[in-house]
Image (cartoon, rainbow over all chains, first blue to last red; front, side, top):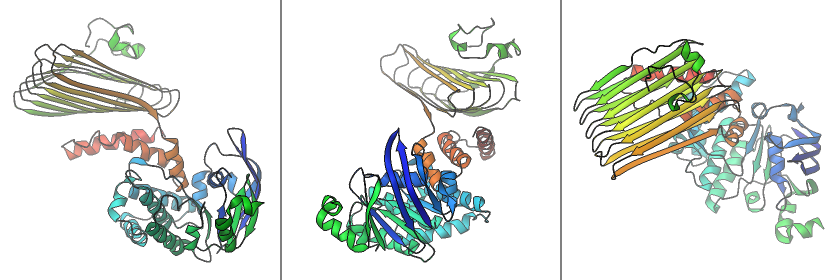
Length: 247
Length: 250
């Protein structure tokens, strides 16, 4: 589904990713762990197409299409979802309006029929219930006045509504208490644990992986993948720390 | 404000104006006078959507008698030069409320110029202006509040926010206060900004195409200006005209 080969990039002329390669197939959940400053968030933003994250070499193919030839909104329409570590607040635009415009933009781009108001509300209710988010929250402006945990839950409701093929989730577990972590983990499983979908989880800690079991775990350090393994690698990292495992 | 002598840009009230466009209209038509009798409420609106290249100047002279109220909604979007001015005099305990939006593109110069005089005690006034300017347009708000010596307990505010869509567009905001009374509350705020790039990327990451995303953010920016228009048909007309104009700019 996603094949990244020898990816290098720069932010403000400073190289961050230095030859990163990774392959994710449909039906798989991959976790990327790594110390602070390793380039984890940079990888997420680069794949999402954030302005300022300049690709200087290598390639990424998403379902056979050159990801870097697409604008950010085209990547989303192609089935990519980027979960933000710090979801952005948009005063004056309600979650429902935001999501309906997003979903219908995607549908227009794919040549599919748009959802009408009633159909959209039913879908939104269904996904909000899945994540235990009050429907009233979705009537409020995007992320404005939401707690850290509510923002992350709202992100997962967005993911449920947009129904992507590949989700790249950047520290979705940060800012969550144990109960919220369970709900978000169950949400990820319910929405994305399917044979035709895949997930790339970016996280500092093992704890999210207790709820969303990865098939593969990778260690990102110094801008490249330095070690890959199964779920046991995450436990080893948790036990021994990055320095020990990478040595 | 309504001058008999053809102005130059050295005149403060015309400093950011388009004098060449003004010449095509000169001499100016007589101002519209609105007198609100004691205790009455007047609700007025102006949709300034003159044709491309035209010059439109609307001068209002408004006298609000004791205990009366005037609510004015203005949408200033048309013409090469579109200028709307208000000279307001407030009686005892009266209220003036101006809600306005300026939306301009191309080479348009769009202006709202106000002079609100609190001549008597206990009057209140509020002015809320939102401007969206793209391409090479210039949008200006020049607003003065004048509080007379006897006008104690005056409460007045001006809130001006402008959004620039292109680096070639210009926004001017000049709130002025002249206060001779000593028990007075006068607040004014002015900001000029651009669309939030982080919000635009967030919206794009959810699949929204750039034009849809920008339009949604701009609608949110001007939302509220026409919220309290009591006549639904007028409200719909102002909002529809604002959105249609916005869509030409993104």
